[in-house]
Amino acid sequence: MPAAEELRRRAAEAAGRCGVDLDAVAGDREGTSPVNGATVSSLRWAQVSEVDEAVARAHAAFKEWRLVPAPVRGAVVKRLGELLTQHKEDLATLISIEVGKITSEARGEVQEMIDICDYAVGLSRQLFGRTMTSERPGHRLMETWHPLGVVGVISAFNFPVAVWSWNTAVALVCGDTVIWKPSETAPLCALAANALLQRALSEAGYSTDVSQVVIGGAEVGEALVDNRRVALVSATGSTRMGRAVGPRLAERFGRSLLELGGNNAAIVAPSADLDLTTRGIVFAAAGTAGQRCTTMRRVIAHESVIDSVVERVAAAYEKLPIGDPMSDGTLVGPLVNERAYEAYAAAIEKAQAAGGEVVAGGDRVLADAAPDAFYVRPTVIRMPEQTEVVHQETFAPILYVMPYTTFAEAIELNNEVPQGLSSSVFTSDQVEAELFMSAGGSDCGIVNVNIGTSGAEIGGAFGGEKETGGGRESGSDAWRAYMRRATNTINYSGELPLAQGVTFDV
Ligand code: NAD
Image (cartoon, rainbow, N blue to C red; front, side):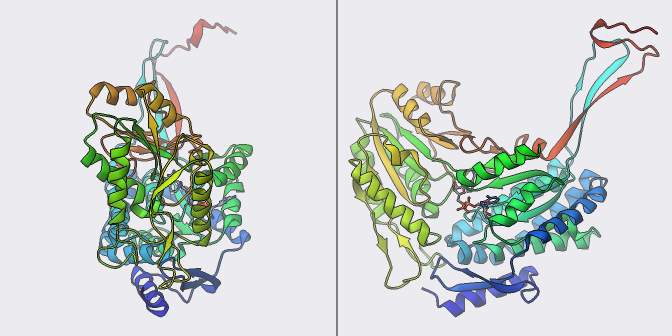
């Protein structure tokens, strides 16, 4: 394990290279690294009153930014993509230090930020509306999309910077300004990413108020949610957080985009290629130490293959290198904190009480080398049925495996949980694949065939149904959430015919 002082130094240097002035943001709120429990930052958290000041500045900046032509706004996002490319290693280091991701996944997260910048630059020339035929002669109907306003972004610890970039790159080309309340676990990541964007804005001669960060806890997020000048709040985190944020926004008719918890399953059919299936399961279930919203938490395997699936996955789990996420070869890093470890241990206990059999993992490791960190062995539990604990999202590497007999039953089990983010089927039977993707199939926002539940690309819309919140971010037409639509009726007839045949002659 790296020494505490070493981690703190590396974090400070990486943040500094990205343009963060650590003295200017210093304070008494300590941030610790899940790698070894060491303190790696001491920062000042924002007061609630400062959120309102930031919103006022963002609102003033919006009045100018909305008038900048979208492709010119796109050029700023292009520059952000270049700066992210230059500082990929710095950001990846900060991600590993603050949230414990292995280096390859941390780099992947930054790559995703670069990808969404590319996407948003193209999008900046394609923010299009439709024209429709009018029922009246000499009339035309069309819709125009306009910038929405100030967008508040609240993000979770496990994608400490990518989620911000999905929202921000798109919001900026749409003409919005952004205030980001990052996870309290990853403030340095946030300050570093935003410093790069502020550099891109300054170089192009725009106000840095277009993109601001407010560091703090839930109360800072609440202040963003309650501020009537924040037109849209895009909030990523637990369903518990969404339950608090959603109604508060609805109360003031603010727009919300909620990206909440998942409880993602894969169905393994008798015809599945079990080598490919095993690899798909192991990455999706044990990768990121089980701390992705799209982590595979359930396997629903046909009774004829369940023994083989369990055996293969358990054997692969035995070989997973666990440890310092920045060491070469490590595939499983730490849990984010002690609370996450307690939730892991409690879920295993509950599953066992409900008849579950732990067939791989199930315990903490490296407690001597890193007593203040929480490394666990990814765990496979064979369950007799889908019991209560399997309905919950435990944000840790626990995979429950359950049997099914008919494909219809497997779909029922997939859909039975309250969350609706991601799902997969492993099958070589085209009919099963089509059924799973059909109206009568998976009820999730992401429905995959022969790949795992995690690792989405930015080109598609990302999000899920039910308790996952219903929001969609990133690609496809997700940009519409960041704009307002005006419907225009243009009369070039010289007459004034009324719609629906109404007459009103004075
Ligand atoms: P969390 O809910 O504890 O915190 C998320 C963010 O919400 C943090 O910035 C936090 O400060 C803020 N927050 C908490 N309560 C708030 C409130 N009342 N008002 C305003 N802001 C508030 O989540 P976490 O532990 O950081 O992340 C893990 C969770 O996030 C998991 O449930 C995971 O599935 C989910 N997640 C979902 C997605 C998705 O796209 N669906 C992506 C990543 C993570």
